[in-house]
Length: 152
Image 1 (cartoon, helix red, strand yellow):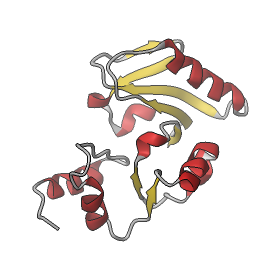
Image 2: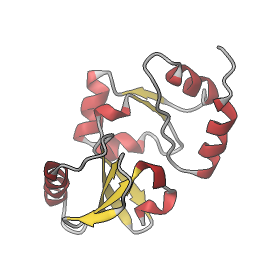
Image 3: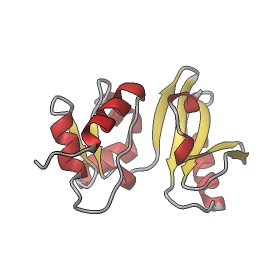
């Protein structure tokens, strides 16, 4: 593998945050880098239809396999996952764009309604825009300001 200057930065961020996202152009070595830096972590490719179906149909069960950390590849294929915070489970919808669409909020409200009453502590939409806000009872957070505390 070609030595990457990003390696130390990525290792540093992983020691600071429970979730780190590595983005970049196609075929630039993101997966190779993550697998080389974290060989002891389970690897899941959400490009595989059976893995993607499991993550989409049972997010809690899927994430239970990742308690000690994992490398999740092609995670944009299953953006609706749940994150455990100090106050309980939080629904998270991730969007890469900078504009907000009303259907993003409807989807989160539908998911919340389908789950047992009181089992969801909050709903969050993470997006590429610059402003943090609350819309339709959903906390909207820019990617640039995500921190571990965002879920509580």
